[in-house]
Length: 540
Image 1 (tube, rainbow, N blue to C red):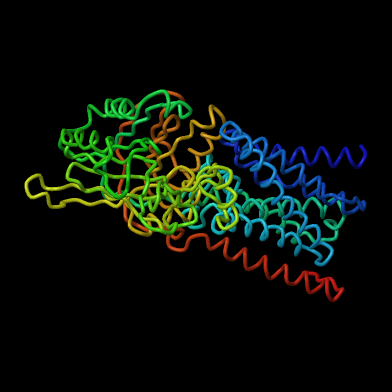
Image 2 (cartoon, rainbow, N blue to C red; image 1 turned 90 degrees about the vertical axis):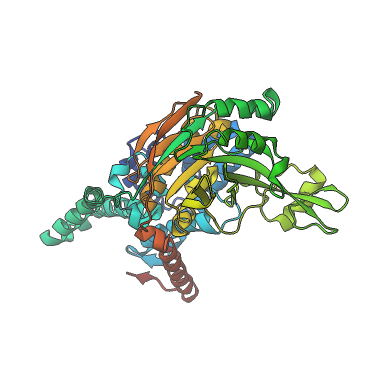
């Protein structure tokens, strides 16, 4: 077999192994070996002097991204293509840096550099990037094998990414050592230690998970989750908002009359709420009439809201002008309300680029103005805040019960530390409201639902997830879906969620593995740059 054929097959194998954990439930273990073929292809190219190997990296990652996230094209072709090719470019760039570092550092240092660089990039995507898409964080690959990753309560998903790199590099190191003959030069104890250490690396994390369990619940709260199953492409033309409201409320008709219950409706269910004054909203009027017959209920629902601002000057770069001296700012919001008028609102802060958020508004706002406002201009909160489930005395209307509830709106549920902030600020449970129907019956909605299981483990909170259509579910603190709905069905999910106020290690300290990786990446990069300038090579 010639060199190009060997490299092609190795790159294809890596792309397939990287993709399967995101497509086939229960195959997360494949990620522990998925990079080995690509690393071996790089070794073949390096040892034979093959030039321009960057394009082989890039092709591998384009295929991985295309197999796993091309479903975005169902909603936006341009956005889907950008996600595939731009994300792959980042990945290929990291491997190109690794290849460059091998000329400046010897031994295991370049491979450590690769692992830290990759995790640092994931951390950057999760926290700082204006154009963010951390969908394929390596630790997410175990979202359907949650029995292996109960230790995410200490590390978060970046701990999973670290596990992936440690396992891949450990096996690759042994294979290269055997292939180059250096394995024979090791004494018996060194060989046993290398093999035993690698086996332990594979077995210890799942074994630890057997002994990790969440703290007992400190209370229960009944929930009803409505899945209205409205086609999002016909939502604003096929049915009026009043008709949609009537249909939704009919799903809650058998809700308890007086006892506590949390009713949940999906993201952007209504678009007639103005944050300046709820009384203008027909939806709020209808919901309040319903709550008058179900006085123990709190209603959590998603809304496309607007804030009206009066002033001569534009209040923000993304504000739209309605008339002379009147501006609007748009939000993707979650609203919690009850019969007693105790309403709270949260504006989504992790916004989808292009559709909701305009990146670098100083640059793109003037361009978008000339194009007719085609980009999303939502404004989110700078910090998360919780919604408040309340119960009041029917006579005095004084609050007798109060539970903070974290609500991640759609895309926010893939950001671990973001969701941990709800819990750090007191959330007794987490909710997710979303509308995944834009993507059709593709792996996208299944991947998105599975990621909520990761949030449950990281925070050790129950999660009540409401989707416009499949998958709505209730997830326990071990990441197990205890009940769920089907795809493209109008259903109501009933159950109970536990309440807790304990804080996990991850909630307290967040993505510390990402911060450490960022530091190590910078230090190793500086070392390599110094060696380049001095013409020396460093060995570990």
